Length: 268
Image (tube, rainbow, N blue to C red; front, side):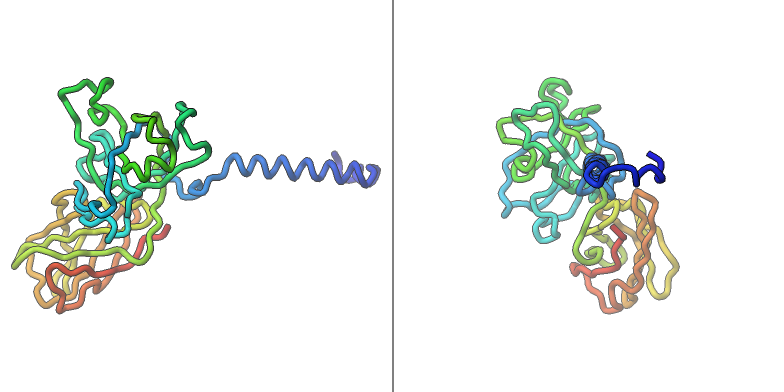
């Protein structure tokens, strides 16, 4: 309606029109929004999920090398990824928003959970992918602790159709660098990474060296043969969304093996 015609409407009709317009606008915004919508890195994709019984006290280990998941801040909001998703460990640390679909009698309506990739769901080649080998290629499958699974579906669901999408990780504090090794062989576990979460390239620098490329040992454990004794350690990380972050002098010159040092954090 032209602006010049508004004055011809009664106050009541004008009020109702404005109210209807406001409700339509709010409804459209609600349909498009999600608690993680602004941080989505991919569109929703189909997959399946199942669960395993997990004791929070035993949340230690995993194919990504994070160790004690509770101590590292991941808790039980974690997932083991099938071979098609795990990417030989390159996916470790990435975050996935997961929601239940199709089997609505088992789903918790309107719910989703964000989990971090911390483990590998190994294939079972003794069973076909469509009948028992849930993590066999080419299946996209997430294996969740029951504590996470029951945020989106009841346990009776078993193997559930889901949708997932990559989202940015939200972390407290900075990135953690756990330095280990001996003499001229160094390993660094990189954890508590925000943003994309999965680190694809790592460089290290001492006070008397240039930037040196590290190799991936497995998961998010990186290695290099070098001599950094008595030198502060700096790190340059690149995540899967091509964002690069440099943290200078993360570890002081008197650093020691087995200790964890905290650097800057990716934006999220």
